[in-house]
Amino acid sequence: MIAPSIAVEGPAWGEPGLTARAGRYPLAVEAPVMAGVDILVPGVSTLSHYARYYALYWALAAHAEATGLDEQRCRWLIRRTEVALAVISRAAGTDGPDPAHGVDALVRLAPEPGREFSVADREGQRSYSPRAWGFWSQYGGSSIKLGTVTVDRGALRSGRHPCPPSIVDMFAPLFEIAERDAGVQEPAALAGRPEDLSALTALMTATVAGRHDPDDWTGDDQTRRATLRILARACQLHPAMPTWVAAFRKAVAYGAAAREDSVLAGDDRTQAWRGVLLRHHSVGAWRHLWAALVGEVHRNGPVTREHLRDWFADQLPAGTVAGLEAGLPDLVDGRGDPLPAELALREDETLTAKVALLLLGARRADLLTGTARRYFLGRRRAYLDPSWVAQRRTEYVDWPLRDLGRQLVDDMLAQSRRVALRKAKVHRGGTMSMPSRLHERGGAYVAATRESRDNIGLRINQLAGLAVQLGLLTPEVHQPVTPLGLALLDVAR
Image 1 (cartoon, rainbow, N blue to C red):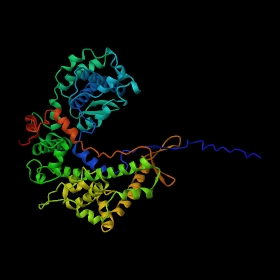
Image 2 (cartoon, rainbow, N blue to C red):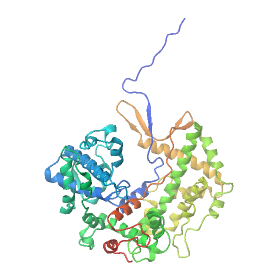
Image 3 (cartoon, rainbow, N blue to C red):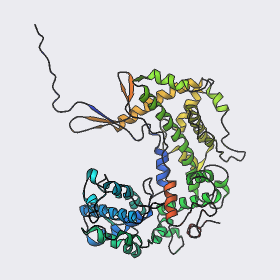
Image 4 (cartoon, helix red, strand yellow):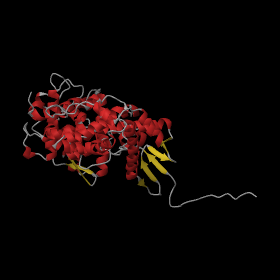
């Protein structure tokens, strides 16, 4: 007798399956640094690279308001204007520090002359940008924060800072070209028109006629100016450092300058930056450890929790947690100023070095005070933060370091699952998506892709790049701050 076959159908209200997708912040350790940076660099994001786009959307908002453009028409004009700017930049051969977005897409799509706007009016692979709103998606939040643009029912409108006539006039020919269907005629001639970004420079530095009056500006405007001043001063104090961030960190996070320098010591935001910069090391250490763990699963998975615990422990040296701490650099000097202990470990890619960075961060919390400590710790305590690491350190200080390593594996796996469940979504049709590269199946872990071990950005490089384009800073060692920067930012030579 042949057994009847049985088919299971349903439930009819939902489709089976769990959709796994990569999460951006799998351990959720980044929030305090991101929140601090958001406060201290208002109007600049990690994606806002070019000053001319701030000016473009400033003028476009004024144009949209004057002509009554609605949401759909604003989006259409933004896309066409961005393509026109890319065409002009390409015609000028602009491959230096200030090119335009979308030039690489134009090269790839190669629209016929006179039909350049076809790549703006299309969507999908034949479009210059996969985003519906083009590069406004990168600058929109920053422009709104800056006060140059507001959004009313989806349409761009002028912000609290009206667009000056010089900016409007600079982009008027571009809008006229974009609103026609004849393409971009004679782009090389258009590329030769001078750019006047002095109004944007004044806005970024919170000055009127070259002077700063705090009563004329909002708190965000004053904070942005303060961070620019701190950056300019850091470049003056350490002009030979290889990067903007390195100079900023050396002047602000470590040493006595934050306490003694006439520019740095006079602003409490210097101490806020100190806290953010020091916490940044702990964030980077956690991200590196997690990426290494996911990498091990990706190479050898599926693997058990015990495999991961042993793998992590095997990469740590013998000895106790106290023994590792005894060999770490001092955190402060005789006057209580921070020493660059973290920098001694920064280039070391071993798991031991990253665990050491976490232990240094746990001790930093007890040595910082006031604003620096507040920004270092963040608004509330959380899993894997320096206070939490300090508690783990107390529990394991006399235990083998490898035991602490095994515990950290458990802690990371547990936190990753908490974060993924918190971000999980149930979609129409009954399916669920969970943002995590790492998944547990039948008691074993699998990972389809690797995790990035890069640390999050501080927006200092973006701010410095804008300052160079606005004529405030230069990459030259002998004169990192221009005469205009000296005057507008009021920093000593």
